[in-house]
Structures are given as structure tokens and as C-alpha cells.
Image (cartoon, rainbow, N blue to C red; front, side, top):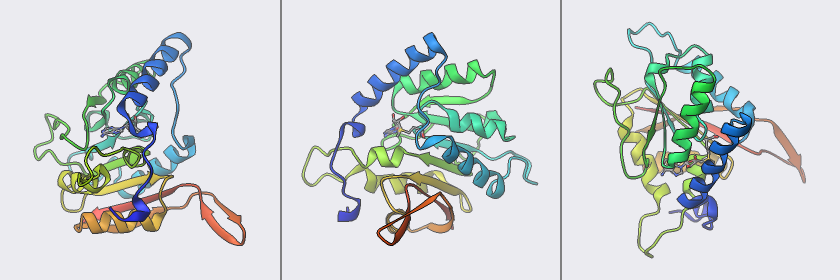
Length: 235
Ligand SMILES: C[S@@+](CC[C@H](N)C(=O)[O-])C[C@H]1O[C@@H](n2cnc3c(N)ncnc32)[C@H](O)[C@@H]1O
């Protein structure tokens, strides 16, 4: 792993942290109707959905609506927002490795009266999501990640020579996309240049496609964004 991508492990890189977090969020939802944390805010959700509508439209001329996978779905709000934007819930799957996230997402979807979405317990680094019955090739037209690669970057490794999960992650994306499929990632731990370099080096069939502009700030004469969103297309 390049040193720029090498972050110090923290509790956000542990499954026990997310399990405890979602246990609390499920009980908050049950007691107060609180849908839980939207990482990087609603604006980041809206921008990713707008990008999707423009580049992988819900009603393309092809017969089937696009198959969309949300990696590390959290409370499932990104999936629900795609449905609000006109996507068919039956072709959208949110996966997470924490059972509480899957449970919370299902409850939030039910609370919003949205049927047809699938939420599945899957560890993205070690297994593949179950293909939907209509999905003959098991591949996804669009894979989304908001904050999950960031969390995975905070994992520790057991052995000194063990491959870090962020070095495995790009190949996992590559294997689940057809030629022409898209991957859109939003990160607040890495710069746009770091994300571009990491994914195109580790998964050479992923080519940079486009970016989303986030609000910028200027400090000490330099401008930057708190988050970046970068899209890749498999050649
Ligand atoms: C920062 S949260 C982002 C949640 C959601 N995407 C959002 O934007 O609100 C990171 C999520 O990644 C999930 N996660 C971490 N490692 C994972 C893995 N290997 N496979 C699937 N989900 C994972 C965590 O359980 C957590 O829900």
C-alpha cells in the first residue's frame, strides 16, 4: 500500500464499532423514528443521486432498469434516495457487514413505505452479494460507495505482510462491473488524486470518468474540498 493511503487504524475500522453503532441506531429508530446518521450529510447523497440520474439514468432505452449496488449501506438512505429519484427498487441492493445496518435499512425503508429494495449482510472484501433473480450475469451497472472505503482504510491488519483490505477493494469492484459499468465513490479521508491513483493502479480496467464538485474552502492561500466524489468506468 502506498504511504499516502496508509492510515492509522482506528475504532471506525472495527466491526464491533459498527455493530454497537447500529444497535443503538435501531433502538433510536424504534423509540424516536430517528433514521440515524447520514455520513457526509444529505447534500452528498443528493449529489451522488444527481450524478447517477445523469450518467446511469433510471429509464434508459435498454430494456432493464440499471442494477445498482450500494457498498456499506449504513441506514440505506442512499438506496431510498435513488428510489425517490425514479429508480426501480427491485434492481437496487444495499449491502453491509453489520447486521444492525441491514436491520436499520429494512426498518427505515418500511417506515417510508418503500417496497422492493434488498438489503443483504455481505462483507464486501470477502464475499459477493447474491445476484438478484433478474440479474443474469450477477454484475452491477453502478456500484456506489459513500464512506465505506474510508472506513475500510481504518482497518488494522493482523500480520506484517498481510495485504491491507483497501488494496483488495478495487479488484472487488472491478470483478462486479460489466464493461461500461460505473463506480462512484465519495471519500473524506482521501483526496481526489489519491482515489484516482489508487483505483486505476490496483484495478487497471477502471478508467477515470468524472467528478462531483463539492463546496470548497480556502486556507493559507490553498483551496480544497472536505470531500471528493470520483467516478470510474470499466473499459
Ligand atoms: C462511514 S459508514 C457509511 C455508511 C453509509 N454509506 C452512509 O454514507 O451513510 C461505513 C459503513 O461501511 C460498513 N462497512 C465497513 N466495512 C465493510 C465491509 N467490509 N463490507 C461491507 N460493509 C462494510 C460499516 O458497517 C458502515 O455501515
